[in-house]
Length: 253
Image (cartoon, rainbow, N blue to C red; front, side, top):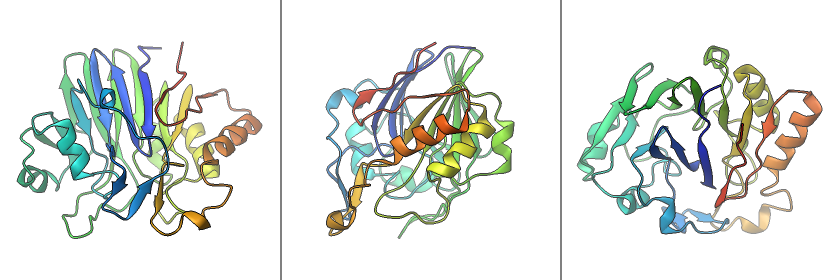
């Protein structure tokens, strides 16, 4: 077992991960809305969420994962990892430290290593470039933290090694999800394949489509709890750190 990260769940697919003396922000969505189409249901993040961040990692270019106003809030000089095919486009938006990542690529910053791994999800951005979706394995020493981004199950999940902490999507936004996503049942299977010790369920209960809030129903925002209960019933030896947006995940040795 290596160093465990300090993980703050900001909401949706945005997390602040402190590991190896560095602070990493994943898929930042920091505002009240995304493109005026998705609205934030969870609490708004404060400046401490992005202040002092050393690195931003983008899993793919969909608007709810690559939000330009949020990236500008963090700053144009903070290094950004983006899937191959998206670097030139992001640089044209004024970001000056863009690093393209393809499968197997590794970014190193001091003790922190970030490795690009597969994801099964569309990489096409509406009115923008096409770049494949990726996940990332963050490590410092022998420990590993897997940030899945958006993905469905894939065979190579079992090859990522014994993961200390998995940041795993369990839903999406709105009343249902399309292809290329995990729901609570499939997220349990992902947990088994990853042989994870800790799982932080993410990508649920944060954003809803404009005009559809009344249709979300009482189940909106409960998918993390459903996932935790399914893990308990499965008998898997894993700790589920069920974490409200804006809170520190209970990931401990």
